[in-house]
Picture 1 (cartoon, rainbow, N blue to C red):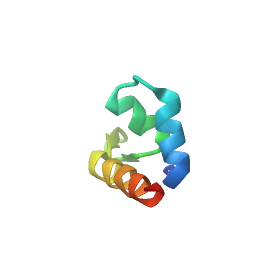
Picture 2 (picture 1 turned 30 degrees about the vertical axis):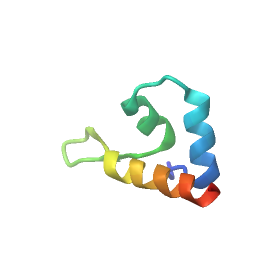
Picture 3 (picture 1 turned 135 degrees about the vertical axis):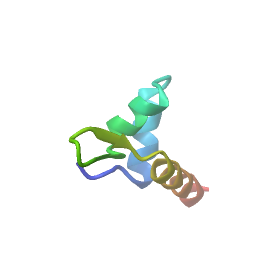
Picture 4 (picture 1 turned 45 degrees about the horizontal axis):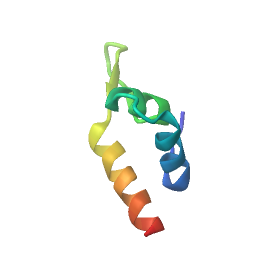
Length: 58
């Protein structure tokens, strides 16, 4: 899944409302696989994309 960006990211975050941070990242595609097959949440990349999206609409 390609991570959401820009207005799509903002819309999805707004749609999910009070979801946990981890759920937001999963729902918007900010996860990656690690060698043992588990999923890793990409908090930094998610928040950078969120900030970039908010700045773009300001």
